[in-house]
Length: 92
Image (cartoon, rainbow, N blue to C red):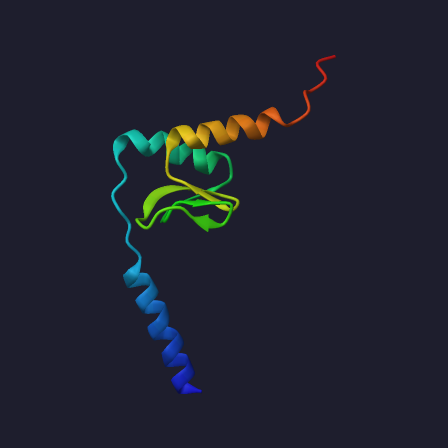
């Protein structure tokens, strides 16, 4: 039992130490704010589209569903297309 607890603690420590958090460039602060405001998570991870990694190098970006989007313009285009599919509100 103690070995299992120690194993879990060591695994957790390795995960924490292994996480690389690159510094956020000032121009991406709006991108991070938009991501979080939309209800998504901001993180460092490899780019992903529909659950499939598309590059080997991790980047800072927005985890939106099964996509990890590292490009601000691509995120804006995704948000625009998402909201364009919603029915128009009745203005009466």
